[in-house]
Image (tube, rainbow, N blue to C red; front, side, top):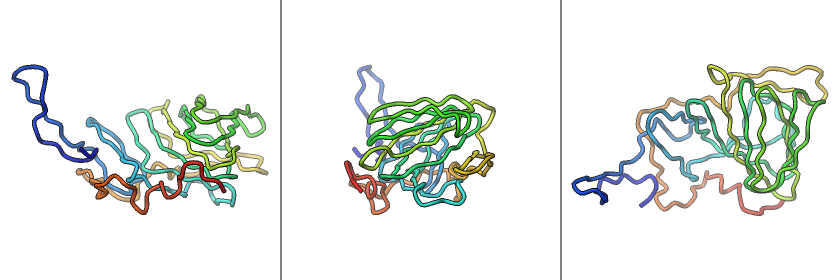
Length: 221
């Protein structure tokens, strides 16, 4: 059975007289969203539905700072989660996402993270495959690809305030003071519809827009 296939056939139960039915997940979801917010029903996002988004709140992007969020970001009441792709030789400058705790889990490659209250006060961490880093509330971070291949990681955010932040604070190299920018990574440009759009990719292989085009295991630059 495909993950997104609707199943209305009765499923056997160990309890006499009980008939169970497995139904598709009817979450509020539509393709091409930056963010999917779960409510009271389970849902899945297949790998083929994820698309690399190279845009960010960083203005303006500089060569060497590129990274892709493999959207959509998945959100619950108090957490958000998204895979990130960082090409060989790339990095991201220091930034803070206010009122959040942050966890990164490295899937592939090697990364170096600097964590602290300001760019001049960073503690350095070298992460390899399957390593995990926790960043406390109100601390910022910068990171770079420290290996010989592209890096892939999972990033998770937990909000510590009443609502999700609407801005992100950047302090770029050479700047004396930080600057606040609108947080565009968690905003949808299209409307959410009540019915989940099921992927037409019934075979399970990646469509042309899939992040698999970018994320080849062991790919070197």
